[in-house]
Length: 431
Image (cartoon, rainbow, N blue to C red; front, side):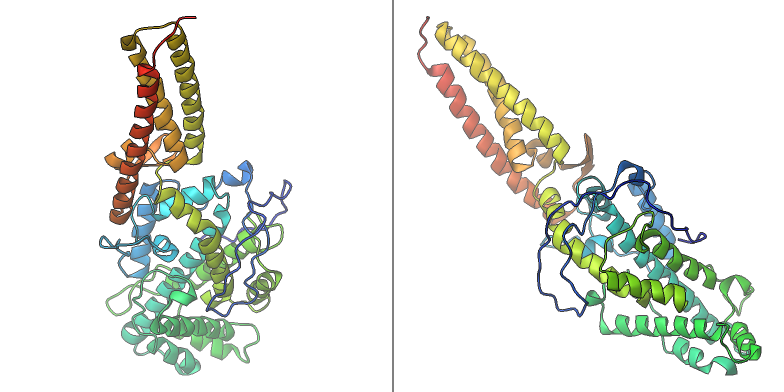
């Protein structure tokens, strides 16, 4: 997020087809404009768009991102709840409070490979990272005002000083949708956005005199301009970084024809564009409505499918199709061999070989039916890409999958035993 803003450029391909014709319409307690999501809200991406993901592709990269985010925010990373006796919520997944196979990495892979809507998740994560960037910037400025710069002339920005001094330590955790924020978090985020807007106003060309701007910039220097000593803590985020972050989100996701354009109501997109380009805003409140809209869309349309695939099964659609084909071929071979052996009046000991194709066929078809490989589930493995597995570490999901694995094994053994007994013990007759 800290680079120069990406410039918008027109698409080089036709728009992707919608994933689903409709989305569920549910009432919500939040006051958002027009929350009836349009048909095809989640759109597919072409292979050319998938080649340059913003988010890391592996868990090692995610761990590095978490370490950097921890250092930037000054607050520890959220810890997974090992005593959760239910399925996680989307907010818990996005805030990294869950373990595989329902962690953020698995959800990202699901959105990329199955839902074909990874741009929406990338947008939400980038906006959350923008919020963390702003919190860190304001926190360090507050520290410099309260501790490191007691002798600076703050007469030109008394309002900004009051906002900074009233913010508190801003130690709450990961940025999330506004409907999940506490009153303290809402107040602090509102004050932080107010300060950033005030700072933009003080530095704008419409300021009445250059003296006011000089006093403001002297009292609240950008982090890279401040010196490092015992009374003035070092900063790692500059004011222009926040501006570049907001512009990059706008140019990457929201402008018509953007590189990874996402579909939002026109009023939301227009409001964000006007706030950033016309009024020069870059505070987190600019993206609040769009962020909540995308969150609720993912929560209604994508997240239930993710839980169904990861918490109730351990296989992905590609592998399921392979298992269905192998299972049908095995069952065809089993029935073919069984009838041949019966009409050749083969001995029952010879017919015992029918156990092999029937067992393979029933096992693979049961795995396809329940989207679950019972042996892998009992071992504690879940598939996230074709033939790549991760350890099941979420306690409640592991217990749930073990119960389902036992049920699937019971069904498999029952059907397999019935077929084997029937075709092995039936009297033979040579034709």
